[in-house]
Image (cartoon, rainbow, N blue to C red; front, side, top):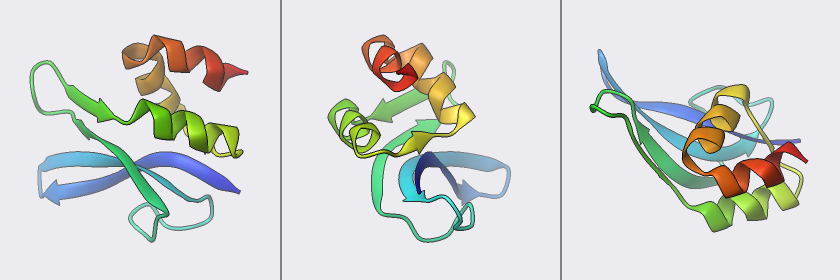
Length: 86
């Protein structure tokens, strides 16, 4: 089963995350299928860049967003959040 989740990258104590599609059983920083966007939590306010069309495509294919990604989508992409909840 596919999952949409965050993959940590960046230096020690300076994280940023890639939002990726990956097989659910792989490690957090393991192999992935596609990069959907980026999340920069250290900027004020936190910066998010997500390709909305690709998120909808993968959700349509059966990928399930993680709890954290679902929250990010709900806060920053209101139209996509309604589709993800269905």
